[in-house]
Image (cartoon, rainbow, N blue to C red; front, side, top):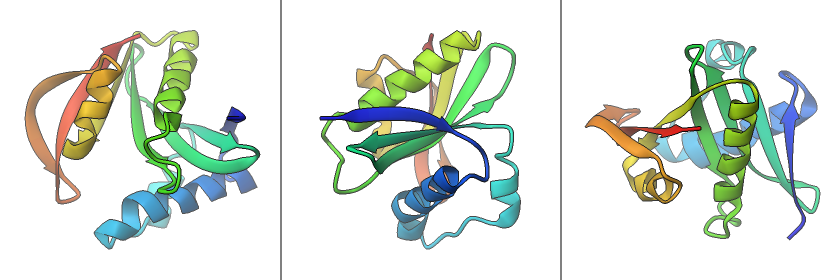
Length: 144
């Protein structure tokens, strides 16, 4: 498996491709669309793209939250590539990036169905479940 990771520039061709993947995997199934404002708000975020043999197969967004906390959001793996370990490797790469930038914690709002995935990667649940975009979520965190 020839897997490569790349931090892509905001508003680049590569970053626009990650938006298409996120839309396909995370938004369309919920009958949702990104707004121009939502996408513009990601200008200062870190956009990580994952390529398999040169083709985009997964991505995520890292958002500065506090000096110690980095929020992982919009984690998407193409449906043809799920359950192959790609998401796990991408999350581990994002943790490496966060740690290198001086963050001490990574957290996310994990969909209920994704919570076991994050638990395997040593994320722990903080607080009670909550609803976001009409789906049950958990705040999950990991010490980097």
